[in-house]
Image (tube, rainbow, N blue to C red; front, side, top):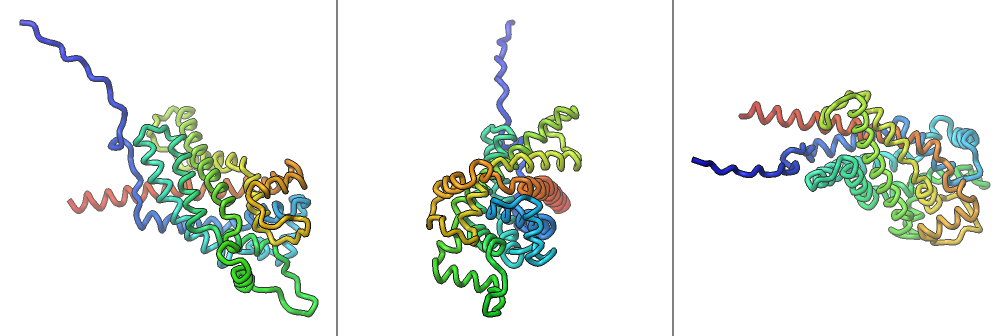
Length: 320
C-alpha cells in the first residue's frame, strides 16, 4: 500500500508574534522625559551652547567660543537657555521620541525590515514628531538666549529677561516668530534620530557578529554603550542642517542678511558668506552632544524599556 508524500511547505518568514514589541505605556513616556531631563541637565546643555555659539558666530574657533561663553556668566554661561526652555523641551520631546520610535520600529520589523532599516524608520518618525509637537518654540527661545546680547544698556538698564524676550517676539511676529526655523528643526530631528537609531542598530548587529552572538542575543551594557557612541558620533553628518537652523533662529545682528529666508535660502546665504567650512562650524561639540544624547536615549532607553517589559510580564504571571 503506497502512501502519498505530503510536500513540505516552505518556511514562513517571521511575523510580529516572533518579534518582541517594547510596550508603549505611561511608564515609557515618563522614562523618556526623565532620560532627556538628565541628559540636558548634565553635559547636554553645555554641548548645545557651544555648538550653537559656533554655528551663529562662524568666525570663532572652538577655544574662542569656550572663552566667549564663559564671559557670559562663568559656568552658568554654559547652561544658558536651560531654564525654562531646555527643561520644557527635554520633558516633552523625550516623552514623544520613545513611544513613537518604538511603535514605528516594531511595525517595520513586522513588515520584514531588518533592524538597521527599522531603526532608521523609527528614529525618523520620532524625530519629526518631536519637532512639530514639542520643539519649535523651545528651540527658538534657547537659541535666542544663547545668541542675544546680555550687556547692561547705555542707560544702565539690565538685560531683558527670557520672558520679556519671548513676549516681544510673540507680540511682533506671533506664533510664526516663536516657531521660526521649525522646518529646519524637523529636518534635523528626522535625520538625527534616523541616523542615531539606525547606525546604533547596525553597530549592535556588527558587535554580535564579532563576539559570536546570535541575532537576538542581548548585548552587555558596555556593548550597548559602544554601539550608541558609534551611532551618536556618526550622526553629526547633517551639521549643515543644524547651522541653517541656528542661523534662522539666531539673534546675532547681521544687517546684510535678507529677512524671512527659507531653509534653502538660509543654506545658500551661509555657503555664500562662509563656504562649505561654515556649514560645518560647531561640528566638534555637536559630535559630543550626539554621543551623549544617543547613549541616554538609545542605550539607556532600551534598558529602561526592557525593564518595564520584564516588570509587566512578572506582574501578569503573579496575577495568574
